[in-house]
Length: 162
Ligand SMILES: CC(C)(COP(=O)(O)OP(=O)(O)OC[C@H]1O[C@@H](n2cnc3c(N)ncnc32)[C@H](O)[C@@H]1OP(=O)(O)O)[C@@H](O)C(=O)NCCC(=O)NCCS
Image (cartoon, rainbow, N blue to C red; front, side):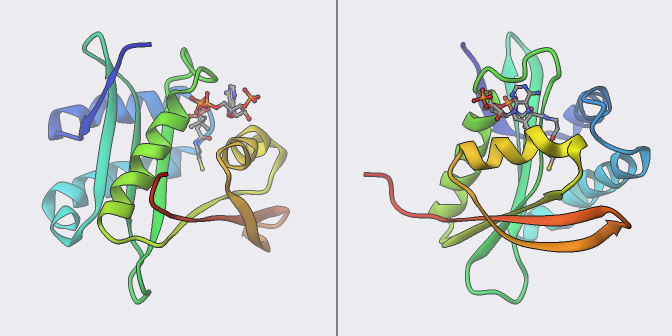
């Protein structure tokens, strides 16, 4: 597998939005929110330490991640978005991007990395993904997103690689 990870550029936004829709994991409202997050990123939030990278292979974007420090905490960071093209999922790319976000945050001083996701069966494989990459399920808030749709918070302490 030969690919590179580089910071997101404005011209990448349409492909990121398309790729996200094509995973069929997100509601239209969530995809709209992503568009706003990326617009804000170039307008404001990257100057406040937000980070976004794409995974590129043979000139095509096949995944992306977005992560940022959590306000009012001592070096806690959040992974806000991650997605891999549904054509190439399950081949290690998501893990590679996740590690990239963790390593980058650690270099910026992060000590704790958090990820929020849904507790519905639709997100079973997503939750398995975080467990596979050494996250612990730290908390659940019943009915957070909607009745029957819990918030699951995964966490990992970041440490220097041996
Ligand atoms: C979750 C996601 C980022 C993982 O990336 P990936 O490249 O598919 O994952 P990897 O190959 O690094 O890791 C594979 C593990 O992830 C999990 N997984 C989650 N979704 C999977 C999928 N569609 N196909 C295969 N494995 C998947 C499995 O536990 C798998 O482990 P296994 O091979 O031992 O069964 C990606 O599948 C994706 O974009 N899914 C849809 C969007 C999404 O859920 N984003 C996160 C929202 S909070």
